[in-house]
Length: 157
Image (cartoon, rainbow, N blue to C red; front, side, top):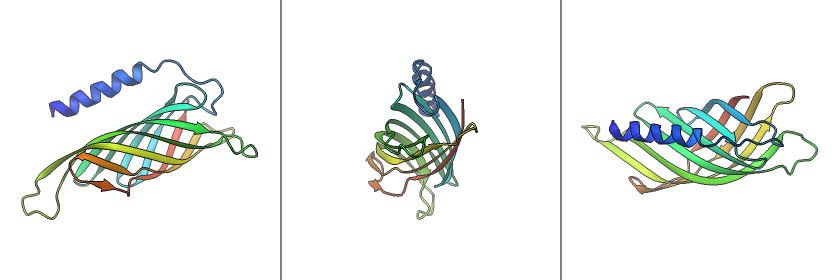
């Protein structure tokens, strides 16, 4: 439990340190939910017009996962204002209980993540929609996981 509190405190300090925001991005900050791999909370803040930090907290029946990502946004779709593709990387830490063991032993997972996806700010509405793929490799815990990612809906401010 102390490790979880330390991680949450670190994420809070990291978010507070990002006081410079973008002026040219479709939005500056956004917070919302991400599905389908469990239920997740997501927060994104732009450091400048193309670089952002995204923090995620994912929850499911037998565990949770915290991720921090640095993302590069590319506004390559001139005909669709507010649409960008992005790529980046970061790290995650999580825990879950094994469903195949009789005693449901807990496992801690720490590793690195990649991310690639599309990000769209709806015109005239304070909403952002994103879809991404987030493969990860565990340095501690289980190995490669190609299944993370999902669809995010965020309120922009």
